[in-house]
Structures are given as C-alpha cells and as structure tokens.
Length: 247
Ligand code: URA
Image (cartoon, rainbow, N blue to C red; front, side):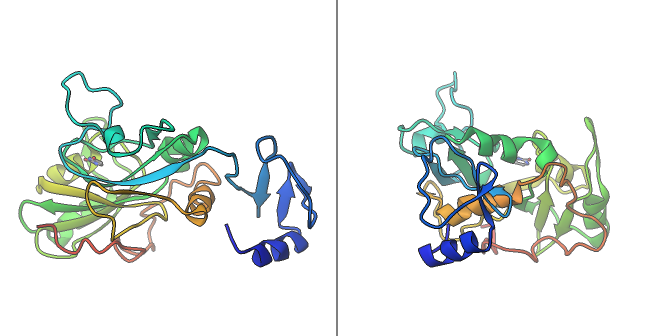
C-alpha cells in the first residue's frame, strides 16, 4: 500500500497494528492468520484475493447464472479464481463494476449501512431544469418509498450526473423518470473512490493495493449514509472519469 520506507515510517509512528498490537520493525507475520490495520483501516493482505475492475458494456447481465443464456459479467474476467460482482448493474447499464473473491469487501460495498457513493452519468430525454435537479437532490417519491438526498447536476444538454448511496433496484432510472426525464443511456462512473476514465468497455484490470486500501478506508465505518447533505458540493465536483458526452 506504500513504499517500504513509508511503511517503516508508519510502523515507527505506531499507526500499524497486528492483531491490535503495535507492529515492530522487522516483525514477521503469517498474513493468512493475522489482522493488520493502518490507522484503524484493515489492510487486505490475505493471499489469493483478487479485485477485477470491469467496465461493463451494455447487454451483459450481472447475475452469476442466466437461464436465458445472455452474456454475463463473470464471462468477461478470468474464471479462476472465481469472483462475484460487488453489487449489480442493470443489463443495459454500462460502467464500473468490481468483481472480487473478497467477501468482506463485497459486503461493505453492497450493504446499505456503509452508504458508499456511486456516481452515474445518465443521458436522459429532454433537458433537466434546475427544478428537476432540485427534486433529485431532495429525494423523489418512488413506489418503494422516498429516495435519500442525492447529489445531482447537469453537466450538459440532456445529461444528468447523479451520486447516490442507496443502491435500490433500477434506482437512477426510476428517479430520473419520476422527475420527467426517462434515461436513454446510463453509465456508472465512480464507486466510492474508484474511477477509471481509460478503461474501455468490456475491459478489466486488477486494482492496485492502494485502490483496495482506499476502498476499505471509504467503507471503514457503517452508517456513513450522508451523500447530498446540505452544503455538500454538487455531483461531478469530486473525482471524475471524463465521460463528458454520452454518444
Ligand atoms: N441505477 C439504475 O437505474 N440502474 C443501474 O444499473 C444502477 C443504478
């Protein structure tokens, strides 16, 4: 997660704990049997864990098995070790999807109590006006209840950028339709701290260990469900991935 030298500094500063005890310089540990944290954030050191970041194309299903025989996201990454998607995207939704065999991270990224932000860029019918964006920010009444406050902006004609943390079924499509702008195309551009503007549709890459550590840090404590609180910046002002136009 950092250079050897930087890690040695962290150890000297007492920021690294092995099973709750301060680590010592030169200490040897069996990484399969200990819990290591830096500043309280678990370091994913178990051998054999893989983290595949996929840019899901449209027309591919997220489910592990599809009776209809449609193409599946697991067919787009190596079959071994077996990985599962951390969450789901609709068949027609494109963009970032993490597949991993790290069950703890899947739990953190999918359980609503961790409230990880997910950012979407939607091409919609019509041109959303400020009133529609305001409704998206404040919460929209859907058939399964009000949505939590979200961050919403319009980076261009016919586009909505939306940051949500709930992950209800077809949530972005339903929210946009509810404010009068049905979605024509939907791309997920960010999962918590994770972005990748260069990953082509259908391509995947392994996460770096610092990206994994960032994901753990972003999900360190449950009940962080707070996107869209008054005073937060509008959607699109954080890390971005450059899907400026949705053709
Ligand atoms: N919201 C949707 O409507 N669809 C997705 O695939 C993800 C979020």
